[in-house]
Image 1 (spheres, rainbow, N blue to C red):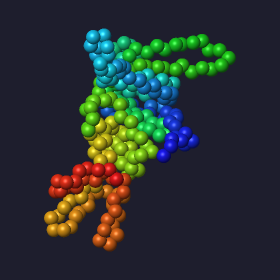
Image 2: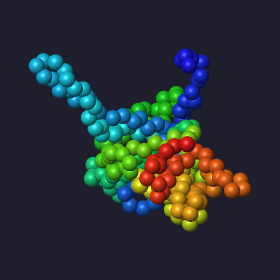
Image 3: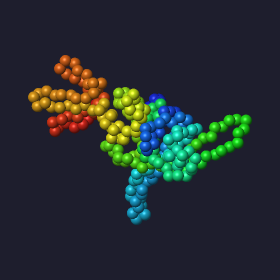
Length: 243
């Protein structure tokens, strides 16, 4: 089929529901968050032989960015080197951070800030609130079924609604638990539980399907599986496949 350019894909916009996760204690809401600028420092590594480039390979990057805000939670003091609310330039504690826009939920691990450059101005006819800004770098963590990274993005258009509910119950808390920053293995387990169906050969001519009710529909003696990764057990000629 010939390529067409008429379709308009949804775009991301806005920043909301920011949550700071200090290295001790539960997560706290970040009111007054203006923007989070994300960037990486990966660069191509080239190999030259006899003056000619033979290889051009991307090297692992270190995730970093910039946070801008009108204000910040008190728990962020220890992350920017402020002790007891007034002693500056102290050791900085690492932190986690989440925020979202209309299409993505971002999760950042092991961030640490650089000194900020805050500009204080005289008050004139127009009131311009002071904007704080901090650069940050990160230390990556182990990612299941992948490498190492400090930045996880959940694409909200494609997730199972029930899986997102469980994830938000951890990040934003529920009636029983405080807000907490789940590690990537916990996140992977949540989504895997809602997207994986296991088919077991009972060795008697029957098969058993195990998985979330939202993915399996039964009609008489047959069942239908939709939108899941299927694992077939005890049958060597089957592999994991996506439906």
